[in-house]
Length: 58
Image (cartoon, helix red, strand yellow):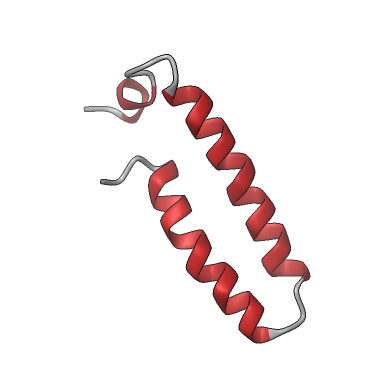
């Protein structure tokens, strides 16, 4: 299946992906602004599953 077909499988899926994209951007900005390395690492650990969900990887 193509990404577009998966992304439009339900009327809620595009809304979910949009909310997920906003969260990914917010986390990425927070990682770049954070000065403590430990907080950056935690942010990266949070970012990985979010990006995988955004790409619809199961």
